[in-house]
Length: 459
Ligand code: AMP
Image 1 (cartoon, rainbow, N blue to C red):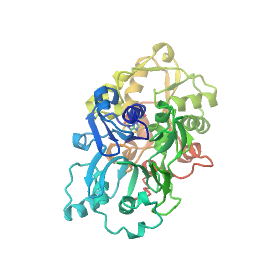
Image 2 (tube, rainbow, N blue to C red):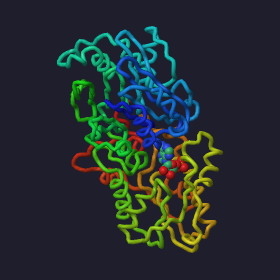
Image 3 (cartoon, protein in one colour):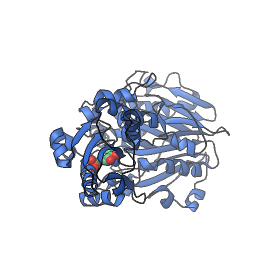
Image 4 (cartoon, rainbow, N blue to C red):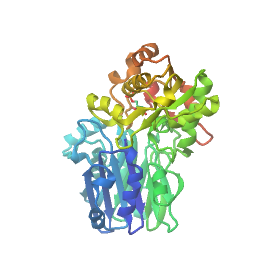
């Protein structure tokens, strides 16, 4: 997972990008990069670490210009290589461009092999670099050269040709000397929104919470399959692969990944997450004393459950905010410890109580087992564990970092075995239908649910 942010037409472009990326920090904590154009050349600063710590004021002052893109990166062990930090800046016979990508290309190996046989030399192990080479080497571009604005005739056919070859998930921002380009794959797996502030500066962001950060208003989503070009002559939208309604938006963004104060896929994450909890209460009513959320991710589902069931919500677990996401630690030993570092039970709330414990998802089961142990030691009488999504049985190939299939507890164990392993009185997962129903509205259909079904829309 990654977060991307772009700014067009503001002399504080690098600082605004810094703020936008800070709001998207939950989408990637490993590294950050910003590329800025002053209309003649593009400069880039990339570094490991969190936005606020890794980038200094001087770095931002050095990045002069009024168009910018930025990226926060999330990867797992092995792939955390400084060369893979985005945006990637390249120079070729048609100028320079920087690219920032959220998603995952599924046919990367085939494409890489083809490109390497033709002489391409890759500098990173990131799938995003495939785009760079496909753009630079694009040949058969005639079919894309019709009906283009004159500013777009040089570069866009190359990009369209690359899009035709790439399969998988990509929300992209491309910075050229005088243009900002936003791209979303035809399935629309990953989110990407457009916003504007009062001064007319345009912004692109993975989630609308980053628009709030720069006091911009959410205008709309970039549509699946859309290429939006922004330059001095305005905004132009193209659908190079045809406008096919193939939308398969990642439902896990609603379940867990996106921030609850965001609008993505044209809807409010907060409402949907809470609806998943209400749905859980309809599907699995339980006689209990308190509803306890696993903070922070389980909070809204727990709130929805509590409202629907009338059972009071209590903070039976308190979170220490000075530790990052436990999931992200590449080593099991550190992951085990960090659950303890992150959450602590409140004895007064849980002692002698029948608890409905709610989290958004169960992946490896590491978090749940630890939490249940803690709650029992704090005197919980019964623990009924409800999950506001179905069992995760398959790894995501579209950009959410899920562990391998073998590590996913629900891919090898039955629900009863998982219940036993975690040590709870009840274990219930929200049904697939219930989850999808919670996320649907009139504007919002077509979700990717591959991690819950193993049914991949494109491979
Ligand atoms: P696990 O301990 O492996 O079962 O992880 C489950 C916990 O990790 C839940 O509290 C989720 O909110 C959270 N989680 C689920 N998916 C992810 C992900 N892709 N990255 C980080 N955390 C996640």
